Image 1: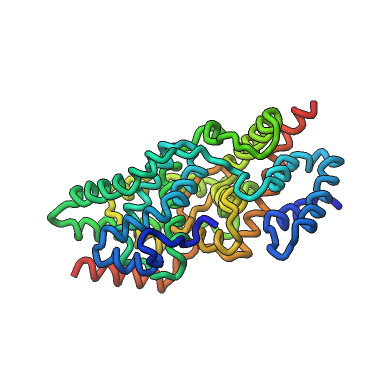
Image 2 (image 1 turned 90 degrees about the vertical axis):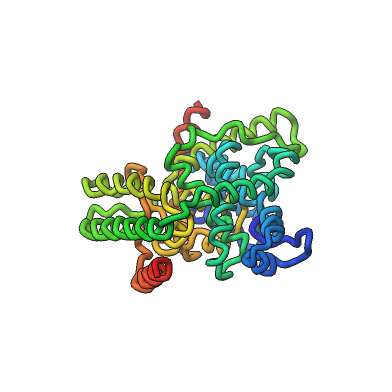
Length: 205
Length: 192
């Protein structure tokens, strides 16, 4: 087995094909261990292999915050919902929500345009650590700060709509070579935009 | 699987509870919270490290869920939807205050039948893996957290992250490649 095969097999093992029985899983682990022992480059993954060998539910034991914490959890959520409700502005809230949403859409849109402008080279690629960091990528990093400030003041229902629109809520976050994080709007399409505008009309009608 | 719906105090399904909660039934929402609080909290804890941050994220996630319940279409299970929300909230919190290097202090020693030395060795090893995972790019980190530590299936991870199963696998492959590179230094040092 070469190193590329080791990586492939390790991913397969993490996949954990449910059709494998314990023997097949052990056999695959032994093959991987055999390579890791002899290969300095892959030896680093021995600890990952050891983690995969642990029984289900034992890979990441978290300290339980205790029964008292769980007993009070629902009550604290209820109180927080009530508190959030009292924070809602009685007058002009809908217009504020709409205004915040429009600004957010414009920001995301301009971000998307700017992102498109650096295609095809120099574009930060989600999850890539090898893409060269460009001036455009650095400029894009500034945008999330503006977004973050708006997100703080925008009502939650606006944020949820934005989630659906830009994939932010579905984990749509990309990273560039410098580790900067920004919303991934690659999933932004005409239908989502129209749906959002329709929602905005309903809010403001 | 942490996102699966469990029968609760009323015995109602998640779908029924959502319908009741939408009509303003606070008890139904309480039951939703009760049913999913551990999965929501542990997802946040894995991503954020500290109990305080995980508690904040879990509370915020349920508040957002309450507000957005009207828009829940049931395309995914309620548990998957809630984990998506808490993942998003955790990401926002993390962006504002990055997690400390490593996530020490969050694990407890669990009796796996091994001796104290072995338990300590396992804990240190897990901690090294966690530190390396914590330094991965966000998407890869999420995939590894959900796949390896939360032991979810590719399909569950894909639904939570809004990706195809193929994309989850691709991110996992990239993550393994990065982890192999990042952990090489620590292994070389230990091997001396």
